[in-house]
Image 1 (cartoon, one colour):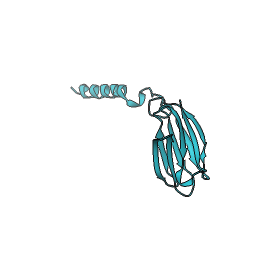
Image 2: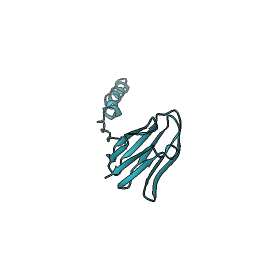
Image 3: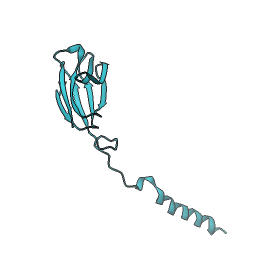
Image 4: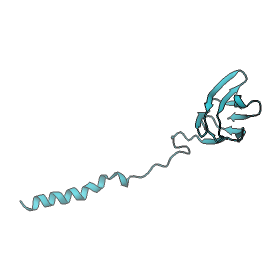
Length: 124
């Protein structure tokens, strides 16, 4: 009877390592970590300009706008007569992400710093 508890403890120790989550094979992340294979493209709002000013992206990609200036900007993405996205107040240091779900050529503007702060987004 004294050997049964010792045998039981030894069996528990032996088999407890078989289900350890640390031994699983890691799954590699997608380029942007969301699992859909899309890409994140970085754009800085700096010195009253979009940098880069012209982007070519794929449908489903996300554009991450980061305001690097010490004052607010707005982000207005549109085509002739059709608004796609608007953020009317992007504060200093703020990050805004926009997923481009429609194909086409879009104009990118900061209305408060018009007409100079403009760009183009081409979505394939």
